[in-house]
Each structure stands twice: as structure tokens, then as C-alpha cells.
Image 1: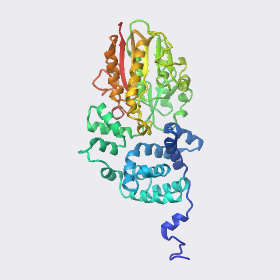
Image 2: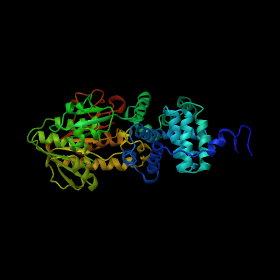
Image 3: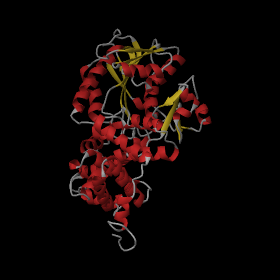
Image 4: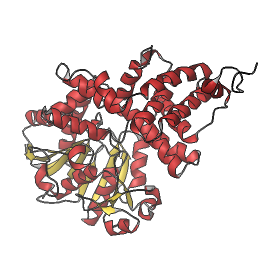
Length: 467
């Protein structure tokens, strides 16, 4: 039967929406596949996304959109789920995971991008119809239309706890972090609520791409010829404002690499500590995947020295081998060392940690980390630090580094080591980083995303004395 206006069945926009064949949008499907891989296989988004972009031959705006939708959705997931709960008759945890991930992508488009609301809703409904089913697409449509009635700034006060009653809960929802991470970061910045909020905000920003020109093999000037700009702190660093780092010739040839500026500087600080006696034998004890080892290798060669790089896992040692040129690379357990005591002049210990300092780069990590792992990691870090101090000769120096500002993984580990041993002298790490301000009260150095635009890298420098 023909309806008024010449439309058949179902009437109006709803009828046309049901009759229209859903359109497959490759950028949005790629973002969706990344989210599903993170949920189903514990995949790493920063590894999955480049592979899918290559395999599906996405480029330009499509590649940028897929990346923004996947990473942005994963960063904002905590806030988005609270908003979805307010717009749904079921809590998010009761929704089928494939449907929930698609709705999250739609919410991100509505609240954090310039995608017009009708396009954000329409493309998400198409995505659900194609990947989940027609019935769920109607549910997604209803939820997203409710979400679209307010901006993110309007939604957050509605769905967040009152800060006067629950400040941590308010920060957790407003800035999309688990409560335990908010508490840990607040403690690390000294309890200041405003600075905690600034740090959480910085975690939700896309990090800039920073390159390292490995000394003796490339220069910042060469990187600048490929469009990079000299960095603020490291003499070997340059910021790449756009484009694929692999398209930079020096990177493609292994003479330069992508490396966070704080990661460069903690390695550089280790090399700047003056030593009495020899300075030819260096160790990177937990070297994988090889960023710091690549820089230390180049610096060691320039000074007539040699780097031994070790990692417990074969595949990580393999990555170190690929990123170094002159270093010796072995598979070895730092707790059962393959070297004699006191064999090295300088030792880098970049200890396994929670990675809370790199949440900008690993958007899913905040939801994957478990606070119960912190004590276990801290115990491992302490044992590794003892092993590193045993590996360095008297008069030599150890750099203890974590990509985490968590007090239990940083100051507590170092303090406990000092309490156990009578052969350790703590150096003021800030003295060896004169380029950088606001590294904390000392003697250790703490980098911050909101202060320095780097990962939240921690550095302690320890000299071994004759015991």
C-alpha cells in the first residue's frame, strides 16, 4: 500500500533508513577492528593500527580518521561509558561487546571530533548493521541520538561524581582514567588536584612524533631537511609534525629512529656522569625493544667503548639487534647474569614497569593495567636494581629508569635499595640534565607529559662505592 507522500511501508526517515543499504566506511571499520582486537586478543592498538592501515591501503584523511577514532575512543572510554549508561536502558557492561565498541566509536565522533552529528550517527548505525546486525543498529541509533543532545562539556558534570564528595571519582570520569591510576598520579605530583587534572589531560592528547638522530650516524640538521624541527631539550631530537617517520631516509636506513625525548635524555644523562678510571664497557640490562640501546650504542662507539645489550625474551632481543649497529646483543636474565660482577663502567636498567608514563602512546593500557601487579613489579624492580649495582664496578654508575611515575616503582624502589646496601651513592640526576627545568625536588629526575611534552620517565643515578 502506498503511503501519503509516495513512501512505501514504515514511513518517513525511519522507512528510508531501513530500506537503504548500509555503506561500508573503511576508516571506521578499521577503527572498529582495532577495538575488537584489543578486547578479544589483548592486542596493542599502536601495533595493530599501522598494520591494518598498510593492509587496507588507507592513506591521507582515511588513515588519519581511522587512527583518531581508534585511539580517541580508547582514551575516552571511561567517560564515554558513563554517558552511554545515562542514555541507555542497560549498563554498558550488559551490552554485547561488539555493539558497545561500535557505539563508543559513535560517541567519540559526536563529542570529540568535527564530524557532523548526522554523519556520526548515520555512519555508526551503518557500521552496526554491517558488523553486528539490524536489530542492534536500531538500539545504537536510539542511544546515539540521546548522546547528541548535549556536548561533552555538558555531559561530564551530569555523569561525574561531585568533586566535593569524591574528587578522585570526579577526575576519573572527567578525564577517563581508572580510579587507581588517578590516585597514583595524584600522589606522584604531590597531591595537587589542579596538577593532577593537567597531567590526566595530557595523557589524553596525541603525542608528537619525536625522532632521534643517532650520533655519528645522522644529525638533527639532516632530519630537518626531511621536515622535522629541532626539539626543545635533547641535542639529538627533532619533532616530526606530520608524515610517516619511515619515509625519512635516515629512519629508513636505521641511522635515526622514533624515540621519546625523555627516553633519549635519561640515556644521555647516564653517559654524562664523570668516571675515574676506565669507561669502555657499558651494559643495557633490560634492553628490549631497543630505543635506549640504539642511542647508547652510538654514544659508546663515539667514546671508544662498547655496549652489551641483554634482554630476557628472544623476540625483544631480536628487536634490539635490529636497532643497534655495533653493540653485542644477547638473550640473558638480569637476575641470573651471564656476566661477572663489577664488569661494567656504566649500566642502564630500564626496568619492567606498569608503563603509566606512556599512556598517551598506548591508549588501551590504562584499562589493561591491574593495580595488583604493582607490588610484584616493585619487588622485581628491586631485585633487578641490586643485580645492576652488582654488575657495575666500584666507581661506576647505574641509571635506574622506569616509564612510570608511580611512587612504588620509583622512589620506593631506589630508597629500599639504598637501605639494603652500604656501597651506593645517590647522585643528583638533575645536574646531568641542565637543558630541562621542573624535574622535581631531586635527587632524582621526573619527566612529565604536562610539563615537558614527554613520557613520564623517571631517572635515578647511583654510583657504586667500594663496600
